[in-house]
Figure 1 (cartoon, helix red, strand yellow):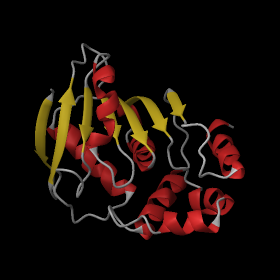
Figure 2 (cartoon, one colour):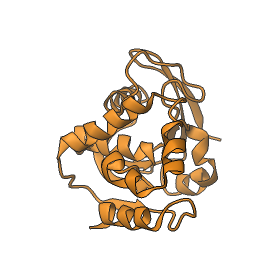
Figure 3 (cartoon, rainbow, N blue to C red):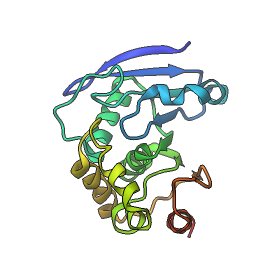
Figure 4 (tube, rainbow, N blue to C red):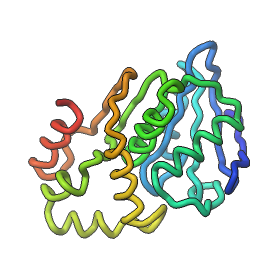
Length: 202
C-alpha cells in the first residue's frame, strides 16, 4: 500500500507516496511526464519497490497536489522537489527516474544537486533540442497537435523555457545513466526516430 503524505513546501502542499523499504539502498524518485502525475507509475511501482523504496509524487497543480504560484518551469519544479525530499526526510543520494518532461526535471535536478544523485533513468525523455531539431522532422499535423497540448501544466513558453534552462546548464553529468526508449512509434517519422537515437546515444 505504501505511506501517503501531503508535504507542506514554501508555496503549496504536495502529495507523495513512499512504497517499499530501502534496506540501505538509494530511494528511487520517479517524476511523470507533462500533465501527468503519480498514477502513471502504478503498473511498475510494485516491482520496483521490491528492489528498494520508491517515492512517487504529484507536481504542483496535478493529481492531489495544490497549485503553486511559482512559474511552471523545470528549474522551479526541481526546487519544489528538493523541498519535498527534505521535508519527507528522504536522504540522498537517490536514483532519479523521469518520463518525458519528467526526464527534463530529473536531468536538471542532477545538474543542480549532483552530490545527491547516485543514478539517472530517462524514459522517453524530452530532448533539450526538441523545438530546433526534433519537431521539424515531424509532420505539420503532428506539430500542431503537439503545440496545442500545453494546457494542463504550464504553457508552451514555460515548457520551452524548461528545455532552454536544461540546455544552458552545459554541464556533463558524472552519474550512471540508463536511457529507455519505447522503440518505433507509428506517429513518429523515420527521421525523428533516428534523431532521437542520435541525441541520446551518440
